[in-house]
Amino acid sequence: MAKTGKLESAAFTIEEGTLTRVADGSRAVFRFTAPAQRHVPEAGYEIDVYMILHDAQGRIVRRRSAERSMIGNRAQWVHEIDNDIVANAATLTYNIQHRVDHRRKIAAGELPPLPPEADGSDYFRWFSPDPRTLEDRLIKLDINFWARRSYFELTYGHTPKIAAEMCRTDMEIDLLDADQNVIFQRTFGTSLRYGRPDYSDSSISMDRKAMRQIKFFELRGKTEISALAQLKIENLASVSETP
Image (cartoon, rainbow, N blue to C red; front, side, top):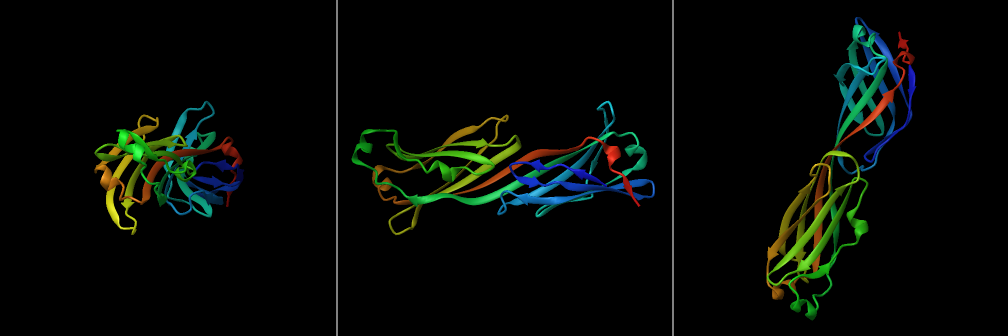
């Protein structure tokens, strides 16, 4: 048995834990367990943990998927691997591939009245939601409402706050009248491009008379983000075999 270090990521924290090795005939069973915490508890998590073995020169020996893996109040996973393979390895790295699916109400509230001076502009900034409501541990959004002469326009940006393999946010906005009835609705989305932020726009055709009927809005979204975290055991020999 060996002690493992603490791992911090944007999606979860794994505290110091234990790694045990149990003999099973010609194979070794490695079991990892540690207290853990999900940082977006209302989101759905999918976890795949791969054991990567390297020799003393840092060359790859073997990659092995977990028999089972999970991160909740505890992080736990199990790998089985041939003793002959383990004998060639000096270090162990756990590649923790995780996908987070976060659905939420992003922002909602009352829109300010569209002032008369807006009629003199074809690109009038109507409203920008509080930036604090547009940011969580995983992403930062930038959303703005614009009044054009013949349509309502949204401009939006999407910046992952972690090194993500994939990141996409799909959003839906309801525009409501004074009685809280939905009078316009639009869905739109944005995704990670080459590891950089993404920016785009979406519009709803309407005239200024229709715009002045809009009193409230509600913006909902679903973010899917895939990322990788690593936990390394520098000295595999320290994981002594448990009978």
